[in-house]
Length: 116
Image 1 (cartoon, rainbow, N blue to C red):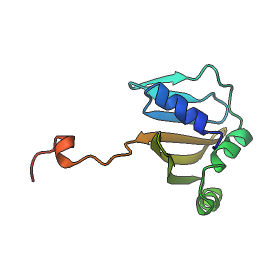
Image 2 (cartoon, rainbow, N blue to C red):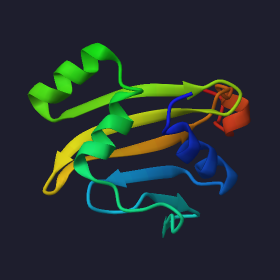
Image 3 (tube, one colour):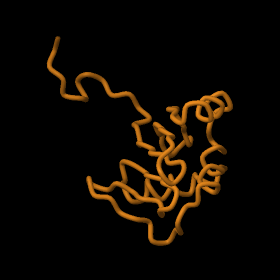
């Protein structure tokens, strides 16, 4: 189990749609459109955050991130959720945003789309 999985479980427990990780800040959850700092977690350092992120980043994506400073990829914790990841560089070091995405692909009817 990756170390970051604990944050994803916390995200799921709080019903958060997003997890924001920025060097120099504590982790932040987006719950019902509002940003909430995770008080039980300390401030993330650049090196600590990079280590946390690289544990789940595909090898080819790490190389691309080192070259460009920006990557996207998917990550899944079976039985919990799937996540869309964006890693980037910012003023104080690296950062990342994870969006929870449904494990089940909804049909047109389930989405309430009109017939085409």
